[in-house]
Length: 243
Image 1: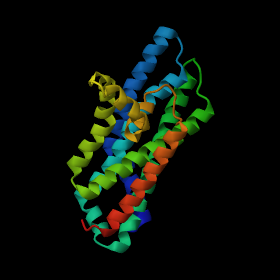
Image 2 (image 1 turned 60 degrees about the vertical axis):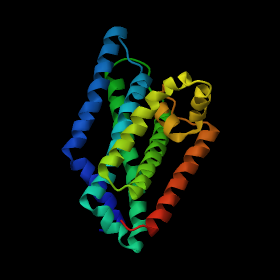
Image 3 (image 1 turned 90 degrees about the horizontal axis):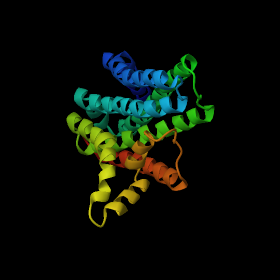
């Protein structure tokens, strides 16, 4: 199996898995329920509100797809097959990176289609096209950062259960703990301010902010630099490690 075949296999395994469609249903049900209630109360639904609600659910679903491809390779021995030869290690890491980007694109397309359907059915303010493009870039950065971080972690600890637990912790537990940080004596406020420059904090926060999928200059630099560093670290460490 070459690198391109691995990308094809990653995407095919997601599209053919019944769990994918179960996850999609579980994601759509609360958003549709929210849309119906909002439409009954206000007789219109703001497309930006639907997009904001959907971006949080869909970002988690997309990251779970990424985690699934990593943990599947660990469980099935695919990662051991690739990492036992130095010539195939770099190709494997590049293939996983491409898979992460394609998953981000897939999730973005699904969310955009859903928002467009809602806008066509109910009355309300529509989402501007440029916001959809911002969403695409945001999801690519989001999935690349968390995906490469978890992949690098899997090189140190090749345990599927551990990777899944760390991923859930980063995207669920850490963001919801942020409001309680000011309660820490003396340093709580400083810690909260510093999170504005830590990717795993502000990336997850932006999934719940109303249509805010753009970064400050520093956040663009930090996110891009973090992705590059994680990719290079995965290449260097993966090229030397036998799993």
